[in-house]
Image (tube, rainbow, N blue to C red; front, side, top):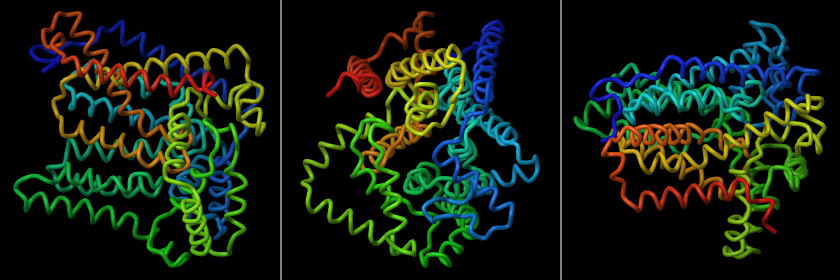
Length: 456
């Protein structure tokens, strides 16, 4: 097994740590400067909705939760920060930056446990702290950073502390909070529970699983009961039908090629007065669409579109820079950013993203992991995302939850290269099929990210 700490811990040189710290600080300083100079970034899209909901919640408006499509925790988080720190956006950004740092700490320990490599863990943490398209979300009013922290917290506890009953309760609370932030994790929870609790002795494992489930249920119960009062359904939020309807109607390979969401959402809101009726109508529309289109045509159109949208080189950071799609279409984003700074941010984002897509498959294929069970779980999580976003409406920000797996893979690639340069015989004995799988996967990801302008 490739383990660079045994025998004898292999420490990262102090100079390298200083250089890495300086690079991370430069990324954060540049993005802060970009956000506020010469004028603050204009809010865009759902940022307006979250901001209005938080202010309405602070004002005591009972209508602060605008639609059961969205989980309620993120507006509550914004309102709580504003209640303590004041209405300035900077306090929200500071809290989210701290959550990003906490995410890096969790990922560092998780990667070290799964790989046995200090280098892989350090690279994964560095990417979490310094990857511009992710760091930028610490400044935005989207729930991606809080959700990423909660997602990593659930996985870390189940990997590192699942033998302790109290920690299983902590994991259940974190899972509940993650569901109250975004609905993504719900269908995947059974996989996490099987991986964590399907062990002997069965009695103790069952007890810990029940603690996890009870903590989760108690965390989401108030929201579920409130939703039942509002809609007649036992749920946290449900945007699945609407997102599937938008996914079926999307026409472009980018977030902004053809905007169908605005019109479809307007039609959705006007279709009925209650959520239950609107949901019924959109499900009937989906059924009618599938009846009038062959499955072959639907699959073909989605293959030619969905994964280009998910993995495209442009993201919410680059789209909001001058000459970006968001700026041109909505007059939102970094409207008056310095062209030189914006150009440097865009170029570095493209280069780092391309490097990440090349390294991640190589690291996952070449490294020999300490804990293969949880690595399989992480890969199943990637496949789960690919499966749901083959059908649902997809934007580039929906790949944020996949970044920890990519960072892990990139860290393993660097650690493997280090082992290879040191002459570790384990690093040389890699099966050809692993190389082939890694190269094909990396090539496909680069194609999806960068080849779109070359395609008809």
